[in-house]
Amino acid sequence: MHLLLLGATGLVGSHVLELALADPRVTAVTAPARKPLPSRPGLSAPILDFDKLPQDPSIWTADAVICALGTTLKSAGSRERFHRVDHDYPVEIAKLAKVHGARCFVLNSAKGADIKSLFFYSRVKGETERDILALGFERTVLVRPGLIDGPRPEPRPMEQWAGKVLSVLKPVLPSSMQANRPEAIARAMLDAAISAAPGVTVVPSEKLV
Image (tube, rainbow, N blue to C red; front, side, top):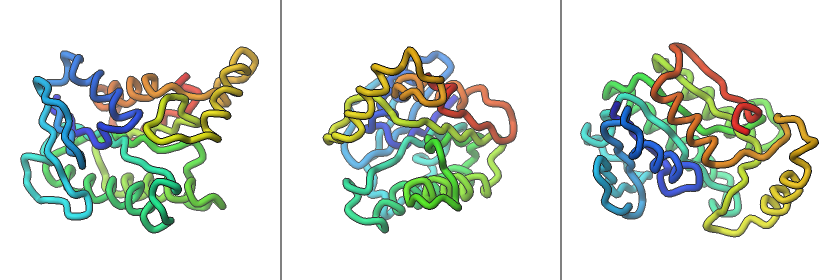
C-alpha cells in the first residue's frame, strides 16, 4: 500500500511515520511537510507551502491518506488561521487525493467533534469531519482521541497538568475518560488505513487507551 501521510512532523504523525516505514504492508510513504524530513528508505517528503498546494499527481497519488494535521489556537494566532490549518488543509488535500485515486481517508479528529458545538475547537473538528465525509471515499475513518498525553515541541501547561492528573487517576477512571497515548492513536490510524471496512468507521477515545 502507498500511504499519503499529512502531519508527519507532529506528535501523532511522527509515530504514524515510524510505524508505517516499519510495516511490511506499506510499500511507500509520501509525507509532504513544511520542513525537511530525514531521508529514509521508502519515504518521499516533498517540502510544500500548504497555502499554495501544487497539483503534481506524484505528491497526491496514494491508496490511502492519514491526516494528522492540527494546531492550537495559541500556535495559530487567530481563529481564522486555526480554521485554515485544521479544516481547510485537510479538506483541500482530501479532494486532491480523491481525484488521484485514494480510496481511504483516516482523519485524526477529536472527542466531541460536532458542527453544533458551543466550543470553537470542537465545532471546527466537526466541520472537518462533515466535509471529508461529503467527498465519498470508499472508506472513511474518524479517529476521535481525547486528551493526548505526550511530549509537545511547544509547551502546553494546562494539557501537561491534565495529563498528570489523568495518569494518577487512571486506575479508577473509565476508559472513555483516560488520556490517549500518541503511539496508540498512530497504531489505530495505520491499521485503519490498511484494513478498515468499507463505509464510515468511528474510533472513539476509549478504543485508543
